[in-house]
Amino acid sequence: MTTIMQRVLPRKSYFVALFVVWCTLYIFFPGIFRNTCLSSTQPSRNVPGYVAFSSVKIGRFTKVESKEYKGLSNVRSGLSKTITDSCTQKQYTCDPTVDTNNGFVYFLNNAQALTVKSYHAQHGLEHLNYFHYTYASVKRLTQLTLLPIYILATNSVDEKYLNDFRKLSSAVNVRVIRTQYDKLNISTVKPYHYHTFGKLEVFNPENTDGKMFLAFMDSDTFALHNIDEIFCLPKRFGAVKRDNVPTSLRHSFNSGVFVFSPNTSVYQALLDDVVATTGTLWANGEQSILNRRFGPTMSCLPVAYNCVGFGGYGSSAKSAKCSIKGSSDVEVWKRRKVLHVKLSDRRFAEALPSLSASWRTYLPTLLNYHPHIA
Image (cartoon, rainbow, N blue to C red; front, side, top):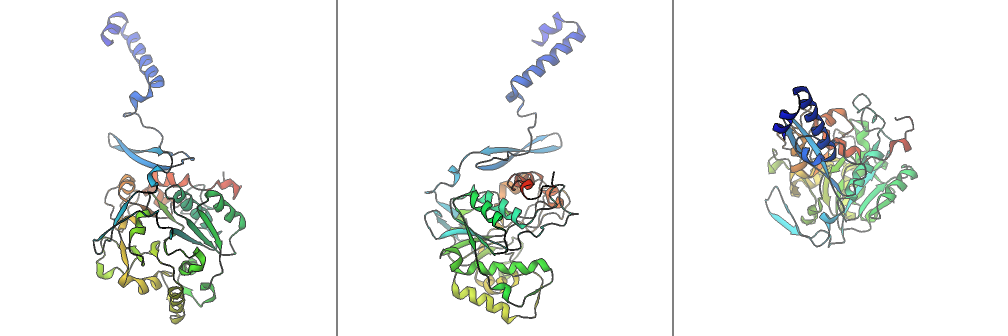
């Protein structure tokens, strides 16, 4: 075709005609250029399944493209799942959807408190509060699991917020609970750590319909994939042990994600632990209480289930705590299950640009809550 055009057309006309043909093909047959022309990285706001990512490299630049998967076929019941205890290396296999005593749980108090200092926040996200973060986390989870999700809220949480949770899915169970932790004499180094002691309330079986095995999720967690296999672990306390931490020091875990069995006696024992240490100035909130009581005997979840430690390498996705060595967040997507990071913070968003973009699509419509946000 090129040879014929060169013979028939003058040199200038040849280049013009070739350009017109190229543009025509690009407009009417875009699939031809799919591997060389990059599509937008902004995922759809109405993703009914989940957003996966694949990388395309052109020259020295790597772009992450989103792919939408419809429905919940990837989490249908009747499928066996497997998880390995990272301390004992023992594998556990089960169908998590069969046991009706499994479920997820969140705790929410002080919902209107801002999550990130305004000078660190991404533009337009300066007013995000703990409701917004919890909403994004829960909404994502409803699209990844068939298991029930409990939100334990105090009576300080606005009823509008609670109704918005209820609208997400019939699997979401909102409970307004009476708490005991706020009646104790608790002192923390950072004021906002005071309400982390509210996590102790999830151990009260009265708050979660007597469920026997639950997974607690912090408000700033964001599930990348289905994680139902964590319910295959023995029904006792379990949390993530980092890869660079020896088994003998597993008691120094992060409490952003953990599995546990609600129990009245354990719940009271945890409150008693706080009373017994009255006068202590807690630097890490309730985490130290949980470390002391459960650390020595806990099951160890792999690091993939509570991925933290980003932002220390500029715009790189590297994280020693999460054992991520590459600079692209594609590695995080492929190898990790749960992010635990405040993605409205521009420092973390720069390190995890595509995952941050996906997370933003799960936020509620901000105009409903802050009309001055453009």
